[in-house]
Length: 515
Image (tube, rainbow, N blue to C red):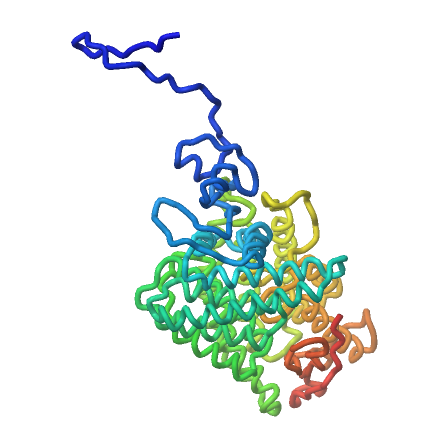
């Protein structure tokens, strides 16, 4: 059959017309095939075209954010030419595990464009971010498979090799890029903080946290939007570290670094405002904690040094309520994030009202706010569990292996410590079981052990469970003893209370049973 011919206006025949074969549009195809305007076979985790052409393969998630799935151990092609990237099979599999299992957790915990930037960095030839995500993937696999049938020794050796490679790669990047590594180097430090949290290495976590804050201080003159997001999350880890052990020299050094930083993005971001508010609160509360153990004879002053934070707290609470009132187009990630932020903001309000008097019984007046905080935490955790990523094969209520900047454990722990209502304490301990296992400088198992120790100590001093806990039975401050390295790393917890009305604080050393 002869092909039809195209005629020009003058009547001349140009040649045969090529008729394009009809095919249905691939509406669920990968982003790379859509950009190249070719049909995608929609294969997962990497389509046939991208596999054959050695290209990056990314599918659009429900929120139109690309979910990276096509990491390969060969060269990549994109709109901008890249050097060929060659990695070992071990690294490739670990990065793919992180992309499928770890990256969705980051997106669930924090609604941030930072994770799209992280995906792009996996293709960077320098490889520091990629090396750390490989170590993260290997460590996450160990945590999630604990108690399984695989051979843990092989997994541990692999995780150790990748961890050593991540440290070496980060050091090399810092030497090569220095202050010009914005925001790659701060992001790498943040990922190392997350990695050390999952590894259960609080000392190393604080080292990387301190390094990240040092670098952010050098970059604060002209930070990028990604750098601001990294700074916000680093500050959340710093806040958690301060609450956990306000007296440690490393923690005090981190607090000084936070005080020296100027976050230009705080004014327009309520989530960042809450971090700053809690940080300012801790600056004042740390003084009381130090006096409790170093100068127990000191008495609280009648002047409220926290009152200056009240306008800031009220303004942030109003901003969060305004955001939450317009949630028609919000997804569960944003709702959960702002819920956790509101709970922290309300907790600050309680401390402003009650902490300055030095009397623990004054917290009883805040029972309704404590109850509201627990309700918000419960709702936010339920929202977090309801988010199902593309990699999930079924809906599960099991908590994630780790989280980033969630701070749910921090809020629940402080409510359980300060609120003496037995029912709210029981609900708080129950909520800890639904929190991710690793978040910040401590894991949920340790937090639960601290809360149980405080509750049992107060109930024993009051004459048994169910009795009213009077002022002289209530714990004012706590301090965990130990380095946290390995099993039995946390040995005991020091609890300070005032056994005599108007007397000095007395420190009790109580064994800490973790696990």
